[in-house]
Image (cartoon, rainbow, N blue to C red; front, side, top):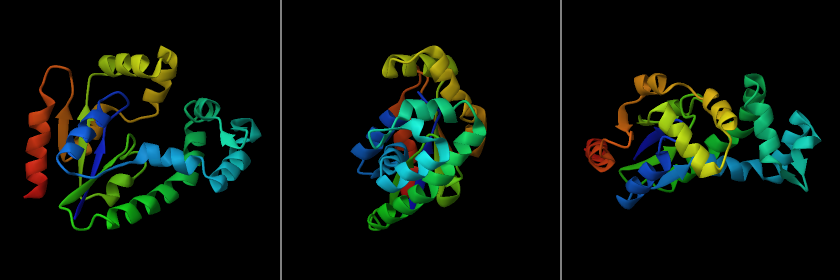
Length: 192
């Protein structure tokens, strides 16, 4: 079984692409959703409260907006958060992948696959790419977020070009080029 990492910057369309892969019978591990679950575990809530102060803990839950405001404004703070979450996320993914050994491949969807070094755990990688302006519009609409909030999140990620240079496959989601043929071509190459 191959482990395939799927990444792309915020608003690139990773989730939609993953739904197509799932329709093809490929299990998808959503690293961002799993990280949120890990973030809300009691053990991690205590660690984050100790690392960032109790102002980010509200009713025994992490106030994700407050934490995001801290970590997306300071790369050092983001790294501190990653050092708490990522080892737990790696272990969880490996356990999940082992449960799918009988399949040709599984996908891990992660916005910061390359940034967090998860690409080194993968056999191959796919990057979903879209123009920055289009991504900004998508996220503002989807999250009902202010432009400055979305731009801060975008700035914490590597450029599309940097990710594309590292990826084995690129899916262009520019609103013009058809996505399905791109996905099917990649799927066929992976299962060969």
